[in-house]
Length: 323
Image (tube, helix red, strand yellow):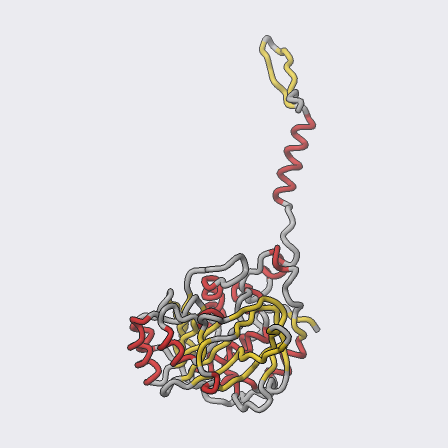
């Protein structure tokens, strides 16, 4: 490469160095290019959108695989008919997260905790606190509902506190790999119904979530008998007794030449407590989906023994919708 970018000339008895004009121009253009560098498609709109702090980040490299935005009418139809006069009480929600354990845009427990603490803080009569890896003694004493999104549910040393928590009527929502037992299989299986274990299977990709047409669970208000499409991850061949579950939604998976129906959303009632499990949540974009939000927000309210529509106003905060 040629290095001649300057010329020397003599003036008033001294050597002076003058940069070639083209170099100066290129330098200025380079600076302009850096300042004006375009953001990834949709990033500026997402950042400027009200409620953007309630969204989980979706890496540009994965964004092309993200599901298309939901239709506004579709979401409104599911939210319609809420009892506006339903009495609510102050509740304490604890969001329990852990160290991220997958690639970009996947299993992002810390990003979820931050975004959903921001989202739930918008709700009236709702105290939101966070915990890392495990709830504190104070959480077990005061929480109305705990939401676990992390690897594995809880360790053995917390079993007495978990028992006491459900005995007093505490609620719990477990998302995705929170159904792992991590060496505490007996207690986790007892309280949540099914857990990840030897022989369990998984698949990433599109799935049709079919809601139980016979369910009268309020989480499925305006959803029973319908199907929603997601791009996430399924688990099946989980360990436990499926007959103990109140199954809310299923999907189908191929096993060899046959097709099996697998539970993906279910409820369990340990003692006086309420447990809801949702296997979805592998991908960050799932948490930005207003239909998934409806399911999760209703589950949180149900587990706290509250009217399921108390968080309806949060379902579309920051979300992208099309008409």
